[in-house]
Length: 96
Image (cartoon, rainbow, N blue to C red; front, side, top):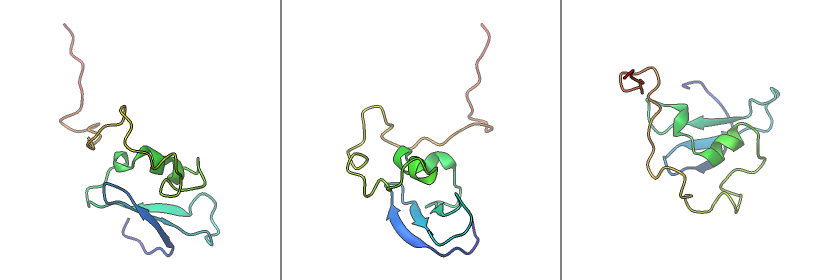
C-alpha cells in the first residue's frame, strides 16, 4: 500500500477494489495486487473469485471467467461484513 507499482489494470470488483497485474516482474508470485477502495482496508474485502486469482489458484481473473461471472451465489453474503477479529466487536463465547 502506498508504494509505486507499474502494471496493467485488470478489472474492478463490486466493492470498488482495483486489480492489477505485471507479468514482466521478476519476483515469482508477486505480480498481482489490489488497490482497495477504502483507506481502512481489510483482506476480507476481496471477493472469493478475486481471492483465488490473487493467490494464483486460477490463471484467468473472474472478469474473464464465465463461471465466476455468474450472479452472487445464495451462500455468499449479499453485503460485505468486515472481519471483526481483534476488535471490540469480535465474537466472544460465554460460559453458561
